[in-house]
Image 1 (spheres, protein in one colour):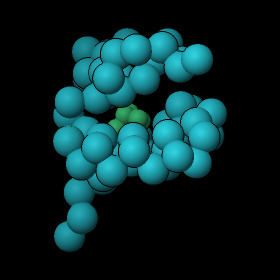
Image 2 (tube, rainbow, N blue to C red):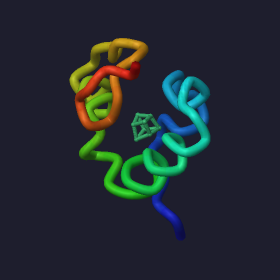
Image 3 (cartoon, rainbow, N blue to C red):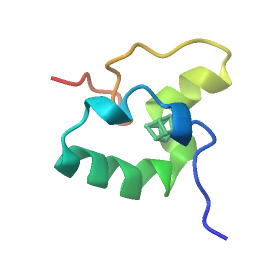
Image 4 (cartoon, rainbow, N blue to C red):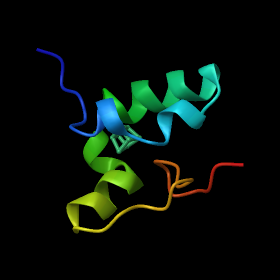
Length: 61
Ligand code: SF4
């Protein structure tokens, strides 16, 4: 079974990305090592990640 981030269906970042960006993020994080995602880490600590925070910790431009 494929492992997918539990936030995947409702993650507010994904609709903001270009198709190309989304493909990379999904491959590397959402359907890859999502525990490494900066958004997921903040979620895990019980806080809301900033809307434009990218999984690598940078800000979406
Ligand atoms: S961007 Fe991060 S928090 Fe959002 S669905 Fe992908 S792995 Fe989960």
